Length: 491
Image (cartoon, rainbow, N blue to C red):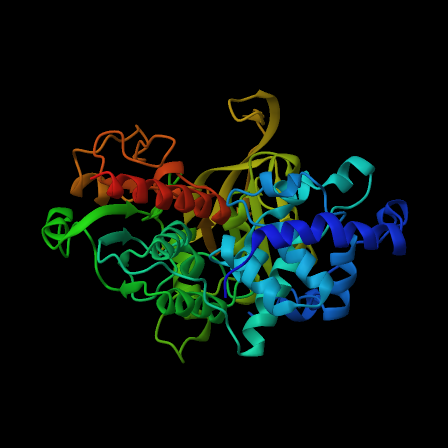
């Protein structure tokens, strides 16, 4: 079913404004209370991997949708990296037409159920909501997005975005993470013959191996994948482009252009003494074992995991929060974050920090590991930690941490997880040495996400950014798909 945007615009500018004048004043609307999503209790959820948030009810969704002031120039859209038609789908919720709400939402967002759960709306679309200027909480766009996607899925009547007439032109997408899935979906709308090549056995990239079940259930991911398959996108797993076959082999098979969305799966470490001791993991390995390989269900699944009682996670980003909250669910008595800056500098979402605290996670801010100490069996038993203080801001704008002399102390641990960042896998650089790369191993692209050194190669997500949010990766994919289309049409 196609969306008539002219009619939707007309509907918003006339009918809705008339109702606004006749039924409720803008001033009264401003006084409305933002709907809060219910959550499972911290005491219960910290012991299992069920989803933390419960979603909102139809009644709550209607109340929240009515708060939208339907701005003539919706700043929420400009705050979204993929330019979702936010007022359009919210208007359909307000009218009670949930089927159309899903159609409108999916016309501009390939992964709505995922974005509604993991996207940092508070720093993007919701931050641009006009309510912020009025001193009121913004419309709960993320909650409404999740509600719309979940309502459609649970109805059993999934709409599939329209795709163009097949043009029999083959394009390849390397990696099935958020940037790759978005690129594939957008290219399918143009009518291209799209194949996604995934190195792992399950599709979804960081969405399945990096984000825990309690934040993003794998069933949600599988539904989104099925939708793309129904759009005609082909999927090939256990296939490493650059190893299984080369890019040139695929080109010889007729692929006209390539999108690289292979992410940044190479973990970073601090290079301090003792880092090779047993039971020191990267967040990548730790979360992959649990999320993708079901280690939390061992021995039902034969992937083992060390269930430490005193677990330290080093870092302050979302990956670190996912790791420490996972450790808590695996039975840790003390699950601790060690972060060299203060909480104000933490890059993790405020919601994730809040949830972690509720679940009993300890925060050791302004602390930094300088050495790991092992026992006679080679297992980590202590961390030598140095206290920090904040100095002048660095290039990121955050105050630079500096050590306090003589402040070192020992902390007993039996598991350490290092979540201080990742870098692109060097495989792409090895497979495509003709591409231009940065000193950090990321692909250099222009504003159209096209390689500056090889025009048939496009890239986006963490392979370009070095580590970013799901929604930014999706934004890259959307830009890349349009650019690939223009490139191919001009061949």
